[in-house]
Amino acid sequence: MKPIWDHDAYTEVVERIRRISAERPTRWGKMNPPQILAHMADQIRMGLGDIPSRRPSGVLSFWPMNYLAIHVVPWPHGAKGPQEAFTTRATTWESDRQQLLDLIDRMRAKRDQSEWPEHSLFGKLSGHDWAALTYKHLTHHLKQLGV
Image (tube, rainbow, N blue to C red; front, side, top):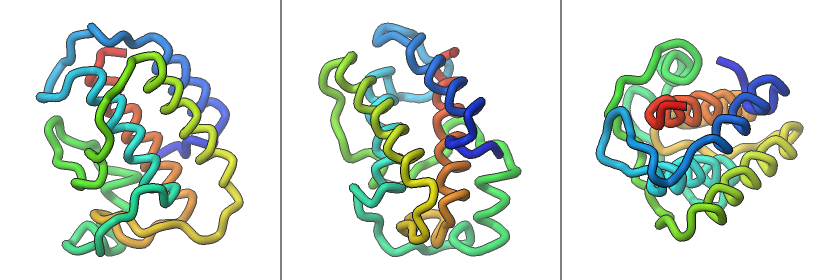
């Protein structure tokens, strides 16, 4: 899986985020576009340590399962995310979208950071793992939005 700090991955995701609208119908799931935008931002906030994660548990929090889930296996539609990734409520579309883009830039700026927060589902992750998880998570939801 490409990390979000890869130039091509970053450019692709940013262009796709800029193409979505608040009224766009989703292909699956219960969240509407504003809720999806807030959820995508919360996942990045978890990686930045802005939203603390509960202690990881379960089989996905151990290698090689976490590696497979992040880097190899496609996620099914309707996969359950951690409760921490549903913290922020949507406000206004343009400000939420800009906030998501700013969070992506913040994550990219921390590329050389040596310590990263644990993820409540995937456990201890490297920066590269967080960057790959972010790219995978964003593209999963951008597909949900049809972009």
